[in-house]
Image (cartoon, rainbow, N blue to C red; front, side):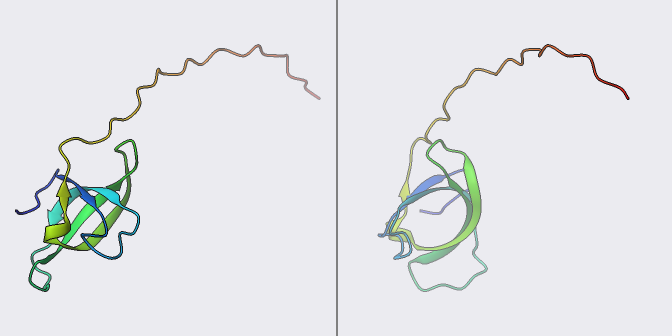
Length: 95
């Protein structure tokens, strides 16, 4: 299966020895112009944090068999907008 923009994939040691610590990546595009060994591919994507926010843009070289597609992305925590309260002002000293 070919990676396409917007796919979210889970990369573990099965995808490449570099992923001792698994990561989630949102795919930007496959890089077909790069020559690879049979069954391997280069792609560009954004590494995601635990909340699904992009933290780094990366170019990755992985085994196609080791790529695991994710159906959902971790949701960002919902926060209420902070309200800025006016601070009492003191007269400024001049002179």
